[in-house]
Length: 306
Image 1 (tube, helix red, strand yellow):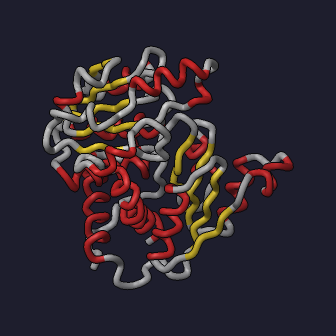
Image 2 (cartoon, rainbow, N blue to C red):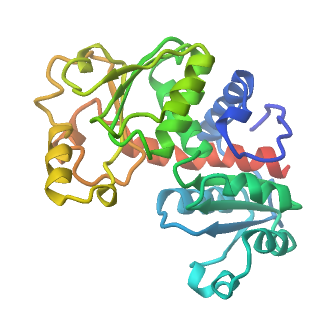
């Protein structure tokens, strides 16, 4: 039975809006749900509105699964081309309208700040399902929950590797890790490192980022390696993309001699950045990470809808 008292949060827009006690509470609540499930239908009669203006598999389907498991139902906007936004309707007006149809809205949008804007016009809670290169708070909670299953979060040594300039999952996770005094190693080619604005914010929060261009120089010291894909569309030269992607690929040889407790995470989708042979190794936790999306998002929905 789920017994933890709620936080009574109105929206989930950015992980920066959550303090450590709130994050710990959500992780604990997700753990209870994963262990015992929801023995009733606490959200029966409630409707979740899914507004996804970018492609999604895991975020959209896990929110839908979470809502159905809690006894509620879902309403999907569909693609932009079949909505009134194709006629020129503003996001603000769309949110106003959908607020009259749904009890909570999950929004994914290509523009940074779209979810914050939506929360200002919505009459119901808004959950940010990813806004451009900005934030992805539900994914961050899944990441923290998955790490928590293997080790205490305090003081972990974590490597973030891939496109750190545009990768919203790494941005959100880096901010959240400051709550746990983590040692963060940013591993990326020149030009795709964490934005200076984020590095400045993290420093202000007491976290110094240690930057690397090569994963080999740090991988054997890490507790967690968080892999993200390089976005091919960011490279005007296809040859440059393939050269860089190949040099940062995670394979079994690279993992020889790493810490026994190392866990390898990836928000998915995976393209070529992790060799499929790694899937059979004990370090690989990314499919478990994807499954964890259901209990974590169940916990989030209960917080804003009960």
